[in-house]
Amino acid sequence: MVVITLQRNKCIGCNYCVEFAPKQFQMSKKDGKSVLLHANDKKGFFTVKSNDNDIFEACDKASTACPVKIISVKLI
Image 1 (tube, rainbow, N blue to C red):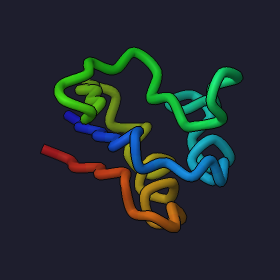
Image 2: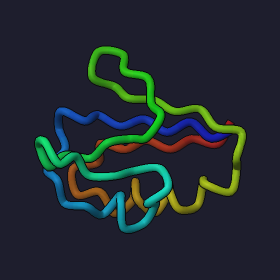
Image 3: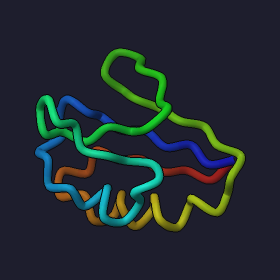
Image 4: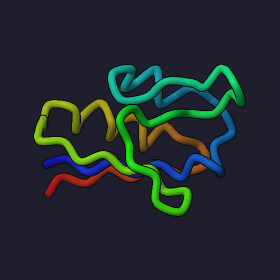
């Protein structure tokens, strides 16, 4: 299982997450910040749990590329 977490309020809108993992992230047209698709919000932390382990590599690259380090990706 892959667990992805995004601290959206700290996003600077660089778009790297969308470039590396477009199936999991998109940019909001309202505020220019990243949106983690199908995520649950808990106090500003947006989280997705997926049984699709194939998304791990793309999301891990997005996490590494993020200049403000607000994306966490874990394989559990």
